[in-house]
Image 1 (cartoon, helix red, strand yellow):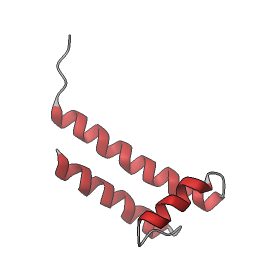
Image 2: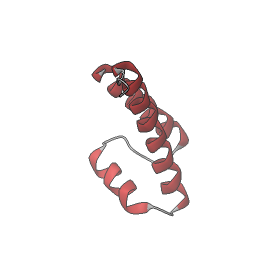
Image 3: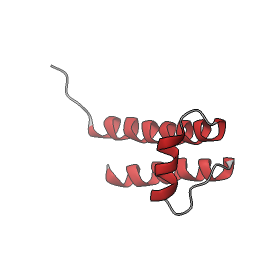
Image 4: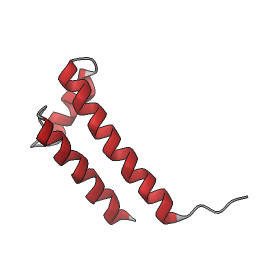
Length: 69
């Protein structure tokens, strides 16, 4: 059985969190998947549908998950 490397797992989680933030922002802008985006806007004080805020949310996810590893 292969050993799981903690750094590789952490970086994979960072990439996943950033992609999920991007997908949720884009789907909120298009109006396809609105209920999770509404929850994000209730939980996060600064969440909005602008491109700059989506990128900032991706960077926030990278920083938060990077500090966990």
